[in-house]
Length: 85
Figure (tube, rainbow, N blue to C red):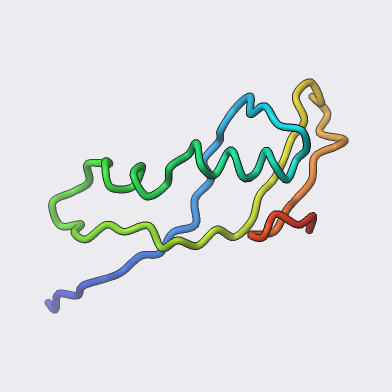
């Protein structure tokens, strides 16, 4: 049986709750900074066969929920450049 080195570039969802901001775009920027994705991925203990874990510096976009909007009527998607999608 052959062995392979496989690079997996995941896009993951990280929830950052209760971000205070003046608008959704600012909330996206603050959430990205608070999540500290580079550090998050380097401090996760995986199987020893998994090596060279690296955050790919790629964000596909954002989904913004307003606090108290339990029906998600004002929820919106934003692209990686913080623009409404």
